[in-house]
Length: 435
Image 1 (tube, rainbow, N blue to C red):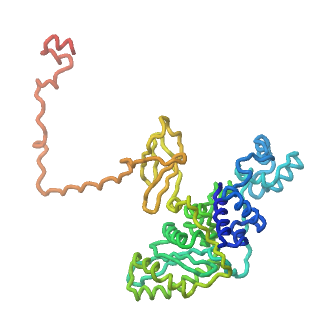
Image 2: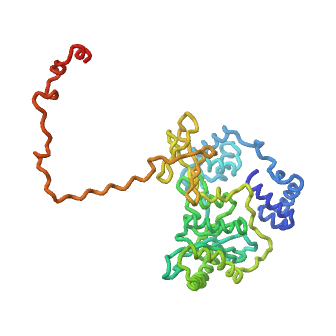
Image 3: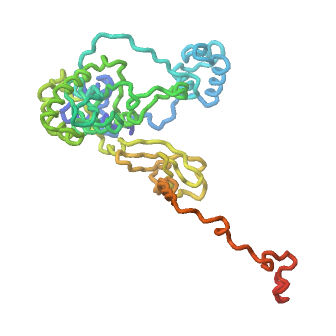
């Protein structure tokens, strides 16, 4: 079963327990109400297994052959391709393929083929300006995430960043201090939110490279979605990241920053707190509970849109950095200027195979080769070189003369001064024969 089907099982279990209405379940599953009724009936009759798609694993009845696909792509390259302002779109190309070449192919099928072959890229237009957005109706439907740099400790401590999560429907907030707005700071805040409330439906962030990034030229050609490490983690959990185009678009959390820069600074001064560790402990134990009791408001709908974390999904395996690395012929992987020697998996060279290197927040590394965890050791090449030896101090005593330091010369009858033909003449005959 897919992840979406497993999540549907968790949502329908809440409907069966009468803690969630079927209308809200349909919105969480992103299906119509009639389809939600069908899925719920199947869930009651067959359990979670009944939610698996009936066509899973079957070959499509109307799938085009590989020969037709290659011919269509060749025609598109020859007649309908080119630069961005010259090439035909999938819909127009499908019309000309049918009218000029006698090949009927659906425009959406052609679009997938062109994206996979790098002959087409999605061109997204900027959304038009709209009026001020109203609050979301459900708790957990949209959570805003942003960092605020401010002299929180005034002159008593270092400048730091407060990374805050604010629920759009209720205004409920949570945040932690960090030195910078890094990926691990965002992970710490989001993980605490998930452990306390559940997985939110969407995150509203800004265009920082921690959360989202622009597409590379290769991704622009293929149409692949650019993902940061944080975006990949959220995608695993089913959280949609929505980047805001301006500070005004995420005005709720910006106003929240203004409130904290006034109230929190004064409370930290009253508590005499001047370091990050004590400040985070104060936030978790006292400050946010008091703040939410004063400023949070009930949502327009009583249904909670947070989704429970699947039992088979461990957060430790989600919140970690993952990068592909190429294996050398001697089964060594280079990662972060470190040389990691893998346990040999076969008698043959890996032929430039790739492994997945995962690093957690504590710096622990796990390497997976062909979806299996492999043992590794760090080689001596990655160990830092020792510091250079200090130069000896120059003595003020006079240096010895060259004649006194020169070694004695060999005498005239020394064996080194004998010719090649004279070597061994004073040896016995049996020793000369051996030579």
